[in-house]
Length: 298
Image (cartoon, rainbow, N blue to C red):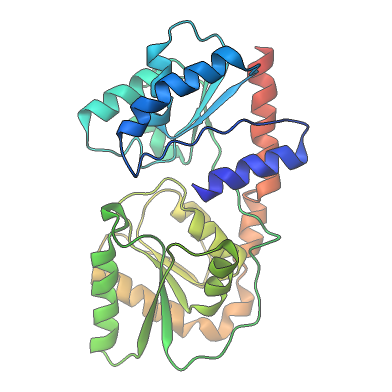
């Protein structure tokens, strides 16, 4: 959720708004969503709130327990929330969606997973801080460094497939070191993105993977399975590859192709792609603030 925090901070810096954040630690316990119902409704009742912005579908559970909320509400769906296999959670999120004024999604494919009657939908992925994420001088290493973007314990990150690709590299004589992007400071993430040779994304599902945008901002090489909006972000970038399937051999070949092009890495600019697609934090904040004003004026 660090990218949500950064989005809120950037909005506060760019525009004259104040924000009251209520954090729900759903990873620790799903009961925290139930506990939030009373707390959030109390905040709405006692504080002067002009607009509510919910991040993650289940976080809007409080809406279903208070039919009298008149405050304009925006919901950002990040991908993993609507990709759930739980029928109960899907039902809850569908009800939450129906109570919101506008819905933000991460990529165009997510529209197929939302009720077709919902019209107020905007595609606004989270932005990347170009002041923090940038290319710096790399420390020479004897090993090939492959980055895994996420917590290996999360099933949707598909760490097993990543390990299969690493095994293929080792079997074929490559001296490989894995770099796990989990529980790192933002500065350390930036440093590691500049140290690795390839970022390897093997997720089962994604919305708009933030680590891919951060890697592009650092001009890092990326090999990814076809999830979220990675095809759009990596299209025609010579030092990046998107496979057709979640297949270890296909990913292995993609890594080899990207490594072979490393000598030409200065001719490819992922950073320019971020700017071209307006995925920098400032551009995204402008889109969200424009939406805020529209919702408040409707």
